[in-house]
Length: 202
Image (tube, rainbow, N blue to C red; front, side):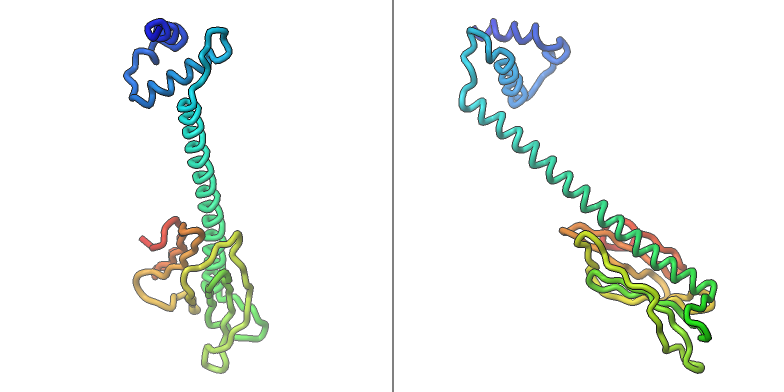
């Protein structure tokens, strides 16, 4: 009886597939597939409970893997979108500092600032009070979307006239996170601004 079924399956399956060496799990799945093909024939014995449970287990595992994969992909896309928006805001104030843009009429600009904390990041215009650079005016405030937050809080300042940064050497990182996945916006001392996956600047 087993020999006949083996021959039947050989006729049903492509020759190259039949000839391959498969694992014990593979042979079990092939046997279940053969039985499924003939499930409604007159001489079919139907499925055993174990075979049904194996199929249900395989389907469940595949469904869980697919759901997790889709969820992770969506989280990564949301982080990437937010990181690009943060990097864009930083580049904007960097350009303002390079061009010496005057945001408040009648003032003497001396710098531009970006700060971030929680789910909020904002940009500020800095101008002089006499000879001292200690006045600020808000340019814009933004909120990260889709539950993304900053892991740390920090402030970054570009000084006029050459958009010099408030730190020398290395880099400063704005780390965004959601569901244990992270993206980071890196601002380097030489003026480069990048965004990428991970939680540290290379």
